[in-house]
Structure formats: structure tokens, C-alpha cells
Image (spheres, rainbow, N blue to C red):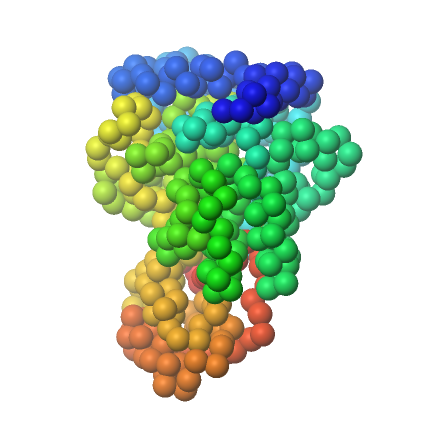
Length: 451
């Protein structure tokens, strides 16, 4: 760690957080202690915090005051994490219908946020300073796992309108002081990517941060153009915001000669998990309780896929209790050999809208179709879109190597995986634009089985 990085991490950023009334510095120190608790001690910590959290919700949040009364739920009697199952699941639809009633009567300053969501219908919700502080501290802790810290030179490839809409003078000055450089993920033309690679080479960052799809797209472009990015000294590339596919990880690691640390979370659900150098995706279990549930709402055992349902214990001003994320994951049976007691995801598979649904009633992960396309000659970019009637459209950005024979092979492979009766349209396009968020999604399903 350089002297300037040390100054940023120990002086400049803490001053910034204090100015914003965040207590992330104290929380980060606490998280670096509690990550080493054994599972029993960690569970006891979770239960105590859960009881206090639910007591507050029952007393001060109108929506949960009514739910607890209707269900005869006594928050004072909570003695295990399993007691959460007596409370109903929270959905985006419920939040939209009860925004004001989900605000705590004791809430201080609330910050309004929104997400576009896979349906495009925005979800409006609120965060208090406690929630923001916890999420900052969790990310900060995970960053330090990799031997880098706030203040180390960083390049951020990001596309959220929230961040891009706040590029005022104060934030621009903060980013310069903390040596964080933003490259908008909305602008990923070949000419712009060449400029981005030149900027990265000039900055020589210690870490990259961004959407997996955007970083992988940049990595593949550098490889295709034979632009050498391997000697820059990049220590880690943090990916988040979407599913990280194996070929994306491989492309980023190969091109930038670094390791990829995958993070899982969202603006609404919080900073849920991050990968350690041993490869495990650790849950931020001190203040994020994770349930994995099957289609009937029952817990799934380790090794089986379930929907991620989150209770964020730092959201008492606007509680997220048993919040359905729409994301699918598998819990690991074994602890990580790094020694941290934090529970581990074996795999986060992505949103339910990343799953394709067949006429026979089966569901398959996006990778099943991606494998049929990604290595074909002449395929530069692609995207699957499934309509409500289960028909598929494949958008292809094609080079001259994509012959009729190759396209026929793609069609045959997809139809074999999807089964008889598949309606498939292949359409060649000049480019595939990113989502409104700046992400480049391989698969989007609007079928009834996608939540």
C-alpha cells in the first residue's frame, strides 16, 4: 500500500464518510472482526439482531404493525432465524402499493432510490443512513480481502443513471482525490472501447470495477485487436450487478492478467455476497439474512437451486423483510478454507428472467443456449429474447465467417435443447444496445415462468 492509498483509506475517506453522517468506518472494523466468528456465534449474533429489528418494525412501521397483528406474530419471542418464516414474503408489487406505510415513524433522513427492474417498471424505495453505511462497510471489507484498498487507482466501468446523474463538482473532486476513474458503460462502440483501453493503460489501475458483461466485452475487444493489457499491474477486477459467466471470467482474467472477484447484490436488496481469494462467494451474513426457497416457498437444502430471499437488518427505516429478489442460487454445504465463518453460495445463477422456459414445462439456465452460440465462427455478439408465448428471437451481430451452414448449426442446436415445437427467429443486426442500466444481457425472458 502506497502512502497516498494509506492516507485515503485512513484519513480522507473516513472524513468523507463522517461528513455524510455515515458510520461505515466503525462498521468495517466490526465486520473484519465478526467474519472470523464460528457458525454458532455468528448465528447467535444474527438472532439477536433479527429480534431487535423485528421489534422495531412491529412497533414503528405501519405495514408490519398490521401484519404482525393479523398473524399474531410476537417479535419479542423471536429465538431463531426460522421464526422469520411466520412472516409473509415481500415483493416489488407489495412495496409499490405500500411505499408510505413501509416507512418507519422514527425514520430520520431518507434517500429515495429506484430501480428499473427486468420489466422496466421502476421500483421506488427508500434508504436510511444506516443501510447506506452497512453496504459501504461490506463492500469496503470485501475490497480489502484482495490486498487493495480505497485510494488505490481504480477504473470503474459503470452505467447506472443514478451514478451518472450525480457527476457534480463535489463528487468529481472526491473521485479525483480517491483516484477513482469512471468510464460510462453506455458507450461501448469499437472506437470508444479503444479510447477506454488507452485510458486504462495510462492510469495503470490496481483494480477494475464494473458490470461483468461490460468488462468482458472490453476484454474481448482488446484480445481481438491484439492490444496488450497484461503488464499494467492490475491486481483484481471486481464484477457485480449481473450474472458472471465462466467465459466472461476467463476473458477478463486472460486479457488483463488479473483475478476476477465476483460480487452479488443489488440496489434494492443490498450488498449480499462477495468472493474471497479462495474462490468462495461469502454472504454478508452479519446484517443480510439469506433464505433460499423453492417454488412452494419451502427452504431448499444445500446443493439445490432456490430463489434468494433477503432480510436486510440495517433497513429499519424502510424494512426489507423476506424480500424476493427474483435471483436464483445454490447454497454450499462446506465452509470455505479461508477460515471465515460467513456462509457461502455454491453458485449464484442469476435472475429468474435469465432462465428459458420450454413448451414441455421445463426451465433451463441461459448457459444452455449460450453454449450453442458463443464459440461459433463469425458470432461477434448475441442476445436471446423469449416472448410470453415461449417463442425465441436470437439477435446476432455477425462477421463474414458466419455462413449459412454455421447459422443452420446454431438453429439445430437450439431446437434440440428446446424440444419440439420451438419457434425460433434468427435476426442479424448491426449492434446490440445495452439495457437502460448499461448492462449487456445475453438472455431476457418474458415468459410466464419468469418472475
